[in-house]
Length: 287
Image (cartoon, rainbow, N blue to C red; front, side, top):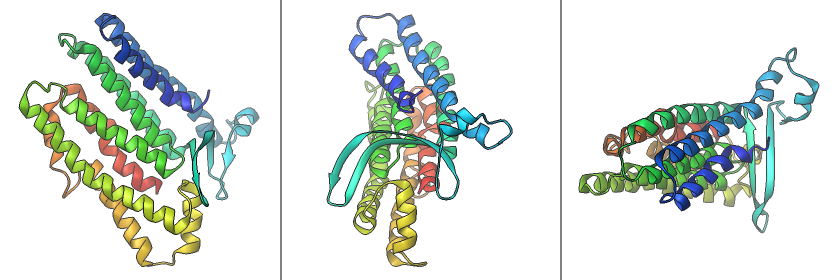
C-alpha cells in the first residue's frame, strides 16, 4: 500500500467529521474516527514489515527486498514521490515520503498509541455536545504527526510540525467556554512558536548553505561543505535544538506542558504519551 495512505486515511476522516458533524450520531462519529486510526496502523504495519524482515535476511522474501531501496550506507527504506512542490534556482522541494527504520518505529508508536487513546476517548467524551468536533481535531492531530514523521524533507516536516502545533492549540482549548482553558491553549501556542521560529531559521540556513532540504542530501552536503567545528554547523545545530526544546517542552520552554492538562484527559494522553512531546526527539534523531 502507498506510504501516503498512512496519512491520507486520518486526514480524510477529519475532513468527513468536520463536514458531517451535524448529520451523524456519536456512535458513527466514534466508529469513523477510530477506524481511520486503525486503518492507518494496519497500513503502517504492512509498509514497515518488509523493513524489519530485511533486517533478518533468512526471513525476507525476494519480493519484499525488491520493494526497498538502499542508501549508500546500505540502510533500507521505502519511499513515495507524489510531485515537485516547488523549485527555486537549485533548490527543489518534493512532496515525498520516506519510511526507514526510524520513521517506521515512530509511525507504529503514533498509530498504535493513538488508536488506544481514540478508543478511550470514545467513551470518555460521550456526554460532550461537541463530540464530532473533538474527534475531528484528534484525527487531524494524528495526520499532522504522521506527516512530520514520514516527510522526506525539512519543508514537509515543518508543515506537519506546524499542523501538530495548531491541533494542540485546538485540543488544549477544546472547552474554550472556560477562560482558563483558552489561556492555557494560547500559552502553549505562543511558547512553542519560539521553537518553531528557531526551526524555521535553521531550515533557511540549511537551504542557503547546502542548497537542499532533503534529509539524505543534507547529510552528504553537510559533510562536504562544513568542517568539524564549523561555526555555521554549530549555529544550525543550536537552532534545531531550540526547535526541539520548544516542541518537547524541555527547559527553558517547558512551562506550557502543565497547562496542557486543561484539555480533556485523552488530549493530555495524546500530547504527553506518543506524539507532540516526541516530535522534538524525532527532529534531533532525523537531522
